[in-house]
Image 1 (cartoon, one colour):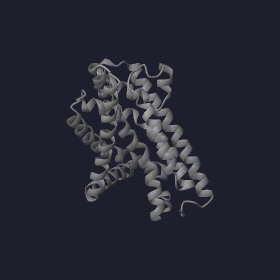
Image 2: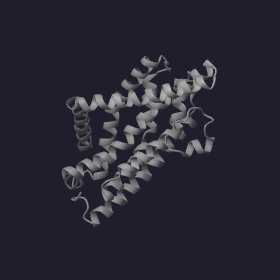
Image 3: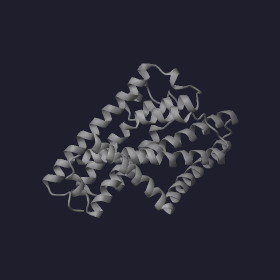
Image 4: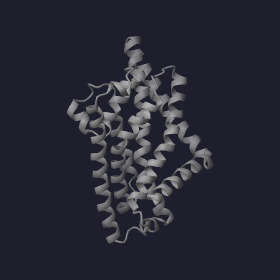
Length: 265
């Protein structure tokens, strides 16, 4: 247990130091996420105006778009970091050394992913506040409640991240596949509880969390308004995808070790 705590502590420190040391990259990441949103937001606004959409309906749509973009950035950070970490360690030649740790490669990647997510959530909130200040569309932010929901549900995305991390062990370069998944994630954050049927929503990764985040940010609800069944679906969805991802990663790791791929790039 002490080893896991030490790994968590070191990983947090590493993530924070990387954000502060590589300031240009951190600022560039924030600006690129901001610029992408602004281009999409004003394009959507211009299109809605040209189609004579009523201001009230357009406003509701744009508020949903602000919340959806925030959730998209959270998922993007969560799933891309794991595969990127594997690729980076393979480039440095440290992947084989990490795999020889007594903690196990998958445990190290999981802790790294969680710590990177926690630190990068700060970046996501900075982007969100910048977006809201620029556009004037302020959504209902109950930060602690949003953090609770995100941390309960994000393990479904980490499960997907572990799948890509496993593929990266074998195929080394999976960036093109990671880029394709971004479009799938956009579909996941479609606002509205009626966007998918209840069964589909419960099956799709992170979707139960997304709907409850919308209920808080757009519907004015709180955690106290949700039933135990709601939390059960969120946690169940998170656990199922996480363990599927862990199983796939371990299988890919065995294949990579058998073929001697951990020490090569």
